[in-house]
Length: 486
Image (cartoon, rainbow, N blue to C red):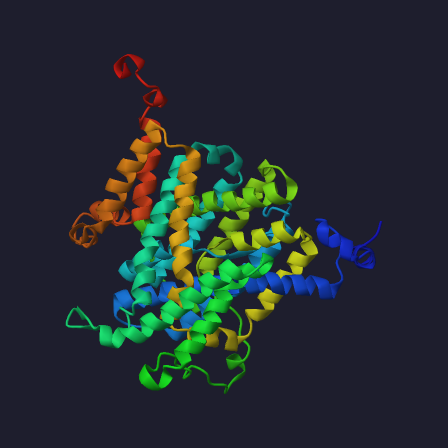
């Protein structure tokens, strides 16, 4: 029987360019790396932008900046976990954790709104512990995902995605108009004279991103965020003499760690204790994991339908959920945001028909190597919030639009309309009342604090209300009363 080295040698000996269009088989290294670079360019900015937006939002709510070491580590860890998640999706652990499909993983924007609230209210320790524990819980459930996922009805997933998109809008808009910048808000009054440079840069960035999406052809359209970021960053540099919009002071190369460093477990940078354990935060993050699974299944269905002409198989759903959940738990361990399937990379696979797993291996290796280069994380920290807001504005809005499309596919029958009306009005509207949401933690009874904390999150609210209503309202409600109509 041939040993591992002999099998590897035989695998490499049979490499050919034709294997690019097959799931298995080796591809010439230069072609695999070129394809890997294409995937990395399409997802890299989105992968790190979520981290920057999350920590900027938490800093704005707390009134003080997050420790730069924690932020640098979060950026490195996001790149590292994207590479590791992509590798496991292509080459499953134990044949069960992973899909064995050409899937690229990356930081999920689904968690930003929830983690901003948790991080600002309970602290970063609670935020990362909740990500770890909820991820492990979903990982266990993931082995049975093909059985329980059918109990979450399409209208529930659609409404939750709408709530996600709406909850992200204030974060993006505040950075777009410079609300969180020094001197923009004076005595509670918005100062346009101080904010106009941020608005101009954000607007130029957004227009560049949109124009690239409109006029670019084929797979190059997936580079719109990267192109917008480069143009926006160049514009921001023009304002350095005016208001120091870009700060390069973080660049200093004195030790080896300033050039090369490894992602570190969060407990080495942030003291954790039993006081960081919060049931309400864990429940909220758990619900967002479930929502993210629904989004991941949508991306998986898009890939299998476009490339293979079929729906996902049960083992692929199980592999997807277990890999995403376990990866998410490790993301919390390393102090970053959980991963999700990147739809833009699934689009590249469907457009080019290059589905080879060895090419995905090359993509993962590029990401893993990049995660060890400290200057990359340092440069990313220099990107102004308004530039990120300009690139992300269409993305945040598109999340809510995708939810509307999902709701349309679920059908606008009487039952779904009633569920949507109540879940959005009561579930999302409740979180707009600051007198209610600001009362979390003020009650003597811990149970009330947990309840208010859960009800203060729009995504968790909409999920709970829509899920209950989807079973409480009978299907017979859709049947018209013919006699009454006559």
